[in-house]
Length: 184
Image (cartoon, rainbow, N blue to C red; front, side):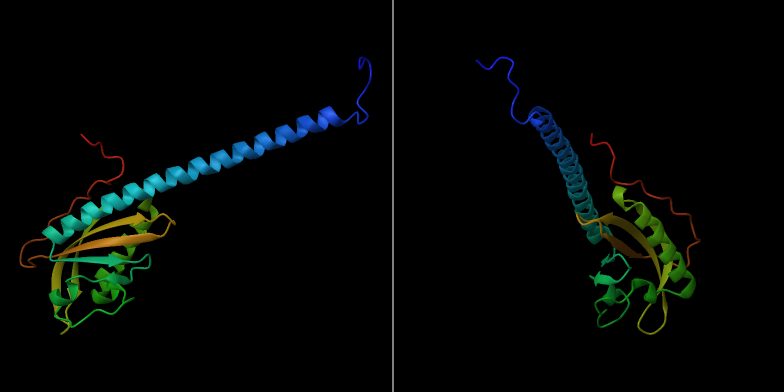
């Protein structure tokens, strides 16, 4: 008969409850982290899909489509070299180096603004003059979007369309961000 007898280790039940409590806490924290990672992965996949759509659109409707790294370095210049009468654009060349001084600053400001909002894949436009191989100005309309990959790194896609500099300058409205747009 075990009635009235105390376990030889009188702290046994309380230690067991503490262990179970700690395991539950660790499990809860791990589950929260797993959910955050899954949500981030889904957002990154959505951004990749949005960018693929934009990439197809820029290739179809723009004269050149350019991929940039987070610092504005050219990863893939597409047809931009042809547009600027250049034989090539080396890897890592900053796209801002191909602008006039004023437009280079405006472009850098635009990239900085887009980088802050890259979680929502923002799209903006900018009129800017690029410099061709001979130092001549090529008036362009840039359509720029930013996104973050699954590691949180920012990248840019720039659609470059040659524009007629003889036409009066017209304001270019910002385009809506792609994330959160209803799919109907």
